[in-house]
Image 1 (tube, rainbow, N blue to C red):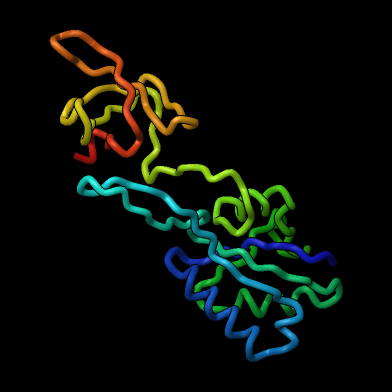
Image 2: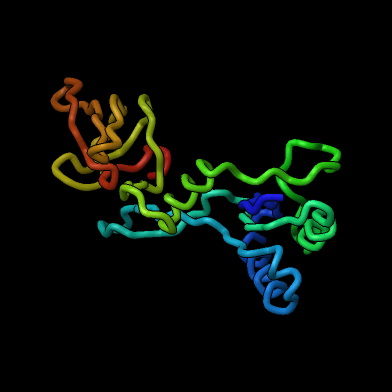
Length: 190
């Protein structure tokens, strides 16, 4: 079989614990270390504005899942997969075969590249990722700048400029203003 990154489903909140267990298994069992090459919980960096300060936080890209790099032998793949699935908190491999009669399918190179670019493990254009996401029609409140405390509706989301165009009421008229992602919160969060 080919070497690849496989997705293992876990209980929510157990991802890092299971990653540590798999890495410990690699240290103590040389045979397992030859088959299981790595385990990762992919995180991405997101930004939020708290008390007027831009704060960087980490967020799981795949909550409830971890990535495991395996080089599964064709004839003994079940035994190696069983070692991982018997870990407390693991529910199984992500696979299209409901009966689990076939080996799990690794992620494609494109999927792996996309995930590791988000984590920063592979070089990519640095993309600003706000903690909250906005969509046209969302009600937001401006929390910083000349329009502080104004509320309005999102008319346009510009990911390249990291900004929103918001319609706010000024002197009884709807006026469009452009505001940075970090200077607004969804109106229901205030």
